[in-house]
Image (tube, rainbow, N blue to C red; front, side):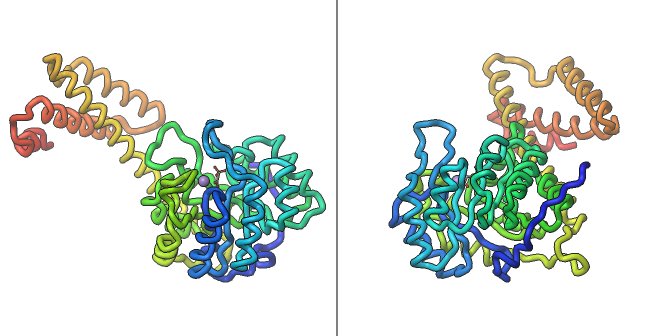
Length: 376
Ligand code: PEP
Ligand code: MN
C-alpha cells in the first residue's frame, strides 16, 4: 500500500469537545424554520455541544423526490445557531453550495457520498475552498473503494483545509439486506490504520436505514474507538420529507447515546485501534450477513415447497441435491475451504430446507413431529 500523508490539525484544536462521542445530529433535510428550531431546541437541552446538521440540497435518486429547500434553509440554519449556540453543518456538492454556506456562516461543511465518488466534483469544491479556514468532513463513496475516500480527503487537504475528518456512512452492496448500506467495517479500520490521526465519525442513520438498528451500529462504532456519531434527528420523524424511517426523536437520541458503552482508547497510543476489537467487529458483521443470507435462502425454499405441493412433485430430488452439494464443495475448494466442512454445513442447510418444505406439504401433521423426523 502506498504511503499517505495528510497535513491536518488535531481535532482538539478546532472542536474542543471533551465528551465522546462527538455528536452531529439534526434532521436529514431542512424542511421548515419551525421544524429546524423545534428539533434544535429539543436536542440542545440534552447535548449543548451537539453539531446541528440539516441537508439544504438533497441528492435524491429520482427527480420527483424532495430535493431540499435551497438557500432559504441556510437562513434557518443561521437562526438555529443564534438561538441555541450550536455549531451548524450541511452538505456541499459544488462550488455554489460552498459560496452560499460561507455567506450564511455555516461552521462545518460535509461532502456527501455521491460527491466523494466523483473526483471532478471534489476538485471543484477543493478549488472553492482555497484560502478558506473551515472544517470539512468527507463521507465515504457509495462504492466500497477506500482509494476514492482517501483521494477526496487528499484533494480537500491539498487546497489548504487542515481541519479534516472522515464520515463512515456505509457502502452500497447487492448482497446484504439487513442494513440500508453495508457497514463493511474493514474499510474504516483500514482508513484508521493508514491515517491514525484522522478523526472518524460514523453516520449510523444511513448505514442502518431504520431507527431500530441505530443502537447496535452506534455501539460498534464506539467499540472501534470512532470519534463521533452522526444521527439524523427530527422532532417528528414520521412526517419527515426524507429518510423518515431512520430518523429518531431527540428523546430517543438521548436514550441511545446515554446507553452507549464508551471504550477507552488503548493507554499507549490514544489514536490506535485495538486490533482484536476491530477483527471481532468484522466477524460480527459477517455473521449478521450469514444470518441474513440464510433467512433469504429459507424463504426461497418455502416458495419451492409451495410450488412442489401445487404441482405434486417430490420434495427430495436426488439429482438436484447431488449437483448442489458438489457445486458448493468445488466452489469451497477453489477458495481453500475444507471439503468435509463445506459438506457438513450444506448438508445441514439442505436438511433444514427439506424440513421446511415437508411442513408446507404436510400441513395436517403436527410440525413438532416433522421436527423430530428431521432432527440430525
Ligand atoms: C445525508 O447525510 O442526508 C446524506 C444525503 O448522506 P449521504 O451522502 O451519506 O447519502
Ligand atoms: Mn438522510
